Image (cartoon, rainbow, N blue to C red):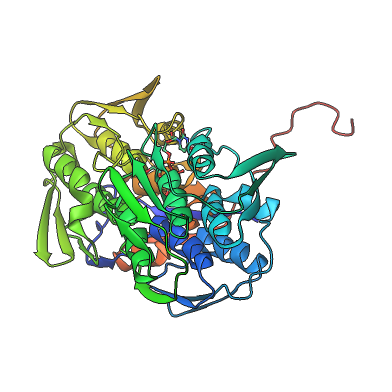
Length: 440
Ligand code: EPZ
């Protein structure tokens, strides 16, 4: 049964968000780090792992391969010494694209892998051609049959690989495969995201020889074997950015703790342009100072780009902030082809958002009004919650499982900031009688 979040908006006179919220470990760092534990038969400990739906799915996938995993107080203990299969379950892999990240480690450890093709999802077609091409360049042979990809290679051979697009997942899969390849691999036009650097740091602590992570050229010198390690996951920059935007829309002096401000420069810059100040109150903590009234938020133009450009994962949330700005904003989405799905639902709350190709035109309005809306994807769901917090009256956000994929204890964290927010079973609306013979 799906669940909804019921949110009492800020509206006139409702208490805004106040206090401090703590950011969890990064989902998009945790998932590749979990996959990397397959590279060794020694135990790997990951510290500050968020309790999320996506992490639980990745746990199931790795356990189904024969590994042992337990999760205690935010720490994950992974032991892949008992892995006895290289085939990942169709049901689980098709639920979460990031499961494709086990491909590189399985090839490095066992020389083979059988994994279903990760389908597209709500935000785009999401091909894996760059993963495939990179691993093929290292000697992997692929066959595709009824939705499964069979990959095999006697020995991965280091090579020079140019990525047509700085794909995060392709960079991660190739890096992991290259750790135990014969010779050296050089990835050109590699992704620069902080999660790539965090993965490289884990691999190095396991004995891999990786240099250049965080730059467009990553070099990996193959070694015979990797050993176990213990690694602290970086804070989630997208969760942090989401709370920064919530604080800008509906907060008063909200503080956000456990963040790496360096990872949020594009957002901090854009918030500044919009008239929202971000003050570093102490190392790893910021205070958000929106203008006196939301209407003083200024319209700005945003274009999403690979890191260090403005992150696509904060586009739905930031475009929702701009629905309250003074003036017209233009948001250009260059990373995914269908990432404006939140616009329709936010418009039901009174916003003026028009999709024009890969642009979203947002004409600021003085207020939003609560309504019943349905989430369609993870970051779109976050945008709906932010809108509900800033709107007048009550908002019900349905299909909240989308949000639980990437935000740990979101209702508790928001309640901790004073939000009036409750989780409940979804109200199933009776189908309106159509007048037709119901017994057809
Ligand atoms: C990662 O996805 C993140 N997920 C995404 O976060 C994030 O939006 C994305 O990077 C971009 O920053 C995880 O880290 C688990 P890509 P990934 O490969 O690796 C095209 C969230 O909300 N492409 O960099 O799948 C692709 O179609 C999620 O937390 C190819 O053409 O992203 C897209 O247009 C959503 N061929 C672009 O590159 C390929 O082989 C970016 O994809 C691979 C990708």
